[in-house]
Length: 250
Image 1 (cartoon, helix red, strand yellow):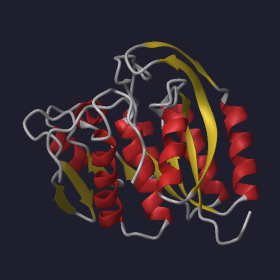
Image 2: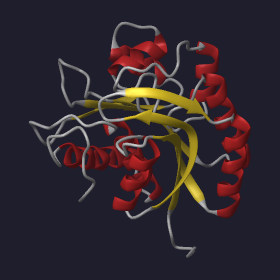
Image 3: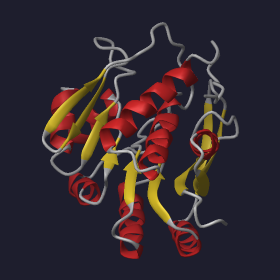
Image 4: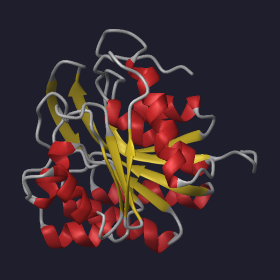
């Protein structure tokens, strides 16, 4: 591969509908003109409307695949999507950092699928903190932020999480401020308001957002602009049609 090619890596699940997970990530990477590499953490059976099952990949297999990707390509930013447990996640993060401490990891903390399937039943706070200290950015929605911290307020939850890493609190599920995201970084909170209205919900929109942020960071945008531009990309994705499966185009 040409040395000037910008590569990014997604560690996520395979969704046969193509709306979420690895396929959604790769589509997003392509639109941002970065080369997407991928390692599957799970094989799911789902459509945009229903989740049927998941089969998890063994951690040993995933770590071996990560080694091959990192040894073969220059990768500065990695996205992590669905994983079966925080211990699994901890092993992934620790392994990546042992290979290259400078890699930025963006974590999309998928606790429950958009169709209601619980990926992780319990959250160990000690393990969570250990992971977050090695993460560059975490992108929870309102419910995920609350569940991760056992608090009742999503903004307070995001502030707590931001003690360990940067946090983008997504507002797509916030009925009081629909579409308003909050970026917590370096002790500051930046409000990111939507630029489009009357958008249509999409299966996998969270995956698309985090993949777009990864792409922008790999293209050397700073965190604020990486998030702002990713939000605009997702709005175009949401506005691509009225169905739950969106088209990727810019």
